[in-house]
Amino acid sequence: MRMAVFFAALLLGGCKLWTVRPIEDTQTTNPGSLSAAAYVDSIWSPKLLPAISSAAVDAQTLLDAQAGKYCHQTANGPCYLIVKGEGRVIGADQRSRSGILEIDIAPFDGKPDLTIQVGPVLRGVALRDATGIVQFSDFTNQIQFADVGNELNARVLKTVLGPFDVAGSKGRTVEFAGTAVSGDSSGPAIRDLVPVRLAVKEAR
View (cartoon, rainbow, N blue to C red):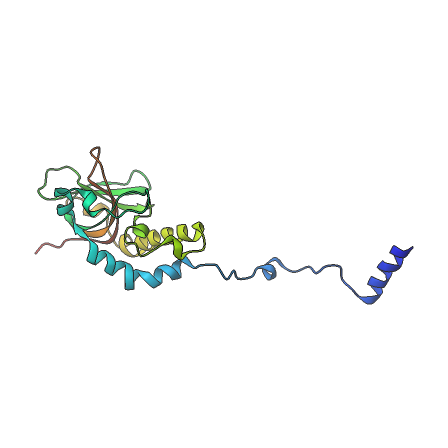
């Protein structure tokens, strides 16, 4: 009886036990959220490109020296190299979505000394981690840190590799700059370079 009176009072008083809202109305902006694209915009030209330009070591120097001397490494991560130079394209392997150019550095011997990633999928986060500009401590969580790495690679695909003619570069000399991984005796000494500059060198 008491329960019936209670519900009757609720109905007569116009009270609601709950409120139904559209899904979009329940979504609020997370103050800890991060726009990876906006973050990359803020560092790309003012910080990242100048840092690579000033720290890049000529590829020939790296081939002639112990790469560990120029290694940029965090914790137990890979040995990253910041590289610039020029070389002859002796192969363009696009059999997988992780396409690469094989580069022979002078003195030319017909063997690849360096590989450049040309996508459409770029592996790794060398561009994020090599310079020290992007630090994990700057972010709220691992997801944000990973998003920035992905966005940097996306920026390369759009602005650097988008205009580049991969098929037409074979046999030609290219100029490059970017971040790479130190190789080993089983392959190229410098591998998986993510370019922030890649262009066919025009004949003079």
